[in-house]
Image 1 (cartoon, helix red, strand yellow):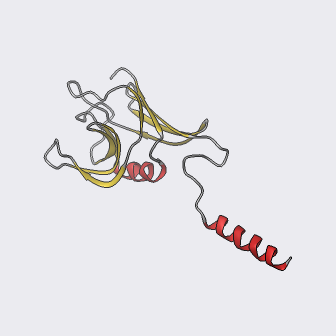
Image 2 (image 1 turned 135 degrees about the vertical axis):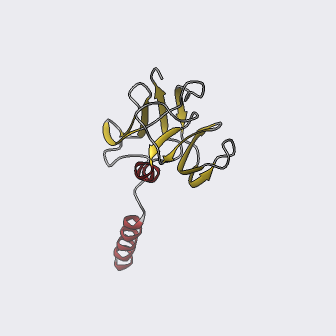
Length: 143
């Protein structure tokens, strides 16, 4: 009987030390992201609960950010663009091809990037810590 109590206590300690999955909220809702190109806004949800919101700057005319649903791929704390003269892209989340969500120093309220989704650096840091590979990212809107 004593061994089983020790096992229960040790098991509880081990389980308590494992971080909760970030793929689901405490209410069991899955992560998802909606990027609204019309209003230049990113919203992140756990289930139906809004957990993060930020202004963004998507692709300018001729370099538009594609619409559609993507699955977040890898994350890199600092990435350098192979396409645009090694431009720094802090807190990058890869969406596919050469499209990323990343921090940038200039995030106006209109499309200004070369196709990526720009976030203010402080917001990108927070978003990077929250999102997990596999999270669905829906990009929609008219710009």
